[in-house]
Image 1 (spheres, rainbow, N blue to C red):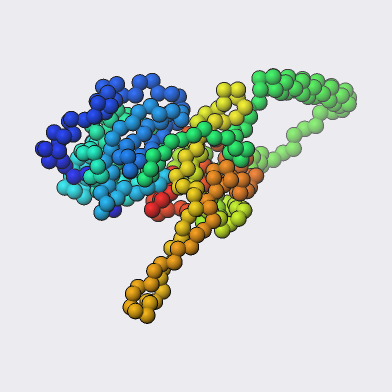
Image 2: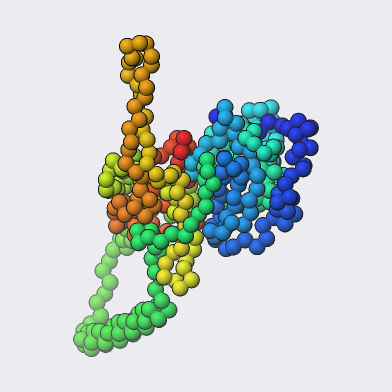
Length: 381
């Protein structure tokens, strides 16, 4: 699916110019001074709305146009993976897609387009001119984008299993360390002086030894045995962590680059976890840890599994599908309680943790959209 908006007819452009008052307000005064913290974008298909957040606070909202039923906008967890100010479609005769912000490599993006008040695109998320022009220079690669049928509102969240940055040594600890180093150095120097003095006394009456004749150069220091390619590569950027119940694994990426994956233990393996997105906002005011917020993408209510009908009734009527009630999905807190992560993985993630880093917990596995140059993409359908 390539989700590209077609050029709008003249009549549609007239309707687009008559934008809602809130959109006009946003275009004239983009977003003001944003709260310092990670940005998040939530799109509701039922509302045809986009909600823009910074540091867990909504700073703007606007009307959008998502995909028509024949070419629906996929729902799930995405992020901005590419941006182009002047983009043209390579599928639809070079149709313009200004202020394009890509969220999948298969062709779904946010961009300027006609917003008639109902789904109208080929799968992309159309924004009004004013909002698209304001949003494009504000965001950066990696900004979280979540698309859902219903409206989503992030909430502050705390749990002992959420990652915490490793504490840095205090000024007092650093001073104590430097003082200890100075004392050790002073002791080493005094010990060496005493050793040298004793050696001089012992050899004062001996005839100095003559250097041995040699016809080869002194041995050179051994060359390093390790190759540079064998050294661990350091990456920069926010850390993304994905725990999949389907694969019973934890996956870690940093700056869109895979770092490592490892098996995890999940209690009640046949019970759904739901899909929960935890985002690190920044350090707590008292410095005691990291602030997190939460979005639950899939409802934690009872889920139903439909089995395909087998055969037909005697009268030739098709058999009705059998609906099997499954166990209730976990809440976010219950999901974290059920997951046991290896300590080594937790320690390594904690060392890399920065504001904007995230943890996704889901029943689903890695989607085909997760690839080179992406964070983890979780498709809800």
